[in-house]
Image 1 (tube, rainbow, N blue to C red):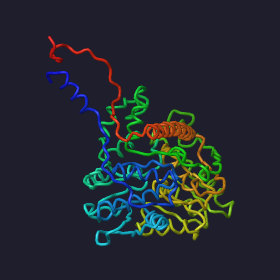
Image 2 (tube, rainbow, N blue to C red):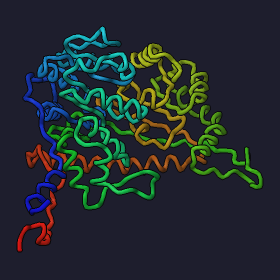
Image 3 (tube, one colour):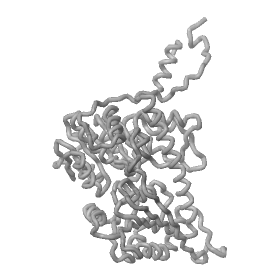
Image 4 (cartoon, rainbow, N blue to C red):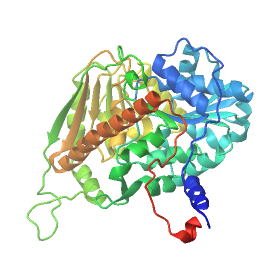
Length: 462
């Protein structure tokens, strides 16, 4: 590095251009809303993108159209990966916009068009066959092991066209954006963190955006993603997409703090450690189940009951006569059958965990949601509520939170994260508006160029 030009070339290499590797649309797509078409155009023009459309804005139809477009562009089959029990729902979304798609379970069933499979079927499929891949509810990857996430990145690293679709990422979990960036081949997550983030000492292992880097970071995200909380964020009309009210009611169950008291103490004072939370849930199990069952049994309407543990699930299913239970030890086929039983009205109440059924399913026929137990995961809570409170819901949705008074800090934490989520969505939406108004698709990660006086041994001047 002997000259000023060498130094400028070095700095230029540090900036990441998010290059477009895509194509123009082959189809007309008259059935798509304007915001869906814009997201589709962006996905195809860029080739490898994320679609962060909030629940109910029609991500599935964007995914279906993109999979068909990828197939047309490459002459190879395309693949849509979905959460459990969502594959048939995705097939129906494909049919609704004129895309023929088939649900497959293994490699021998792959055909030349659009293929749909559950994530769990991935080991049975040769990923090299596909010219394009779509990850439905891509944030579900966080719930998978690191090995599985690595396998997905590796399996599709050479796939020409990739689309990752989910609602807006979880607040205070910017690594989720990094995971999407890495899957799409844009930038590894650790590099993203080093560029725009600093370690947050208030959260173990967490990161926060550097104050001066907020706009720059979201502008970079806007070069490879489209996000919207409402259609107007992408230039569409919000009419018909404004949801009916969502009402929360907290049912506080009193815990007996004189039970299981540590030696030397007059009463139990639980902390927020995982061990203490698990203990409190065990001690308040019967009271929470009774209250939750009461809420489910006092109506004849469909009810979704969410829980966190197997013991809760079993006791709730027993206490609610017309409920169907979905738990982790069931086979994939049994889970799908049980989920479908509630989806299609064969069972009035479903009892399950957010990590099993909190992604992708359309349950707008239910207006009552009961949380018999909650965790610190705001994303799981948000996704669970949005199974019912989403586009197509015509009535107000009532969410009932059943917690012990010793667990109130958990609900306070979830509520705080909800406010963070709204802030994050606003930042993403503003970045999308800037990206569209400026009509920029290629943008350098670093746009600030400070004035620096270099010594003569670098400039070559005497």
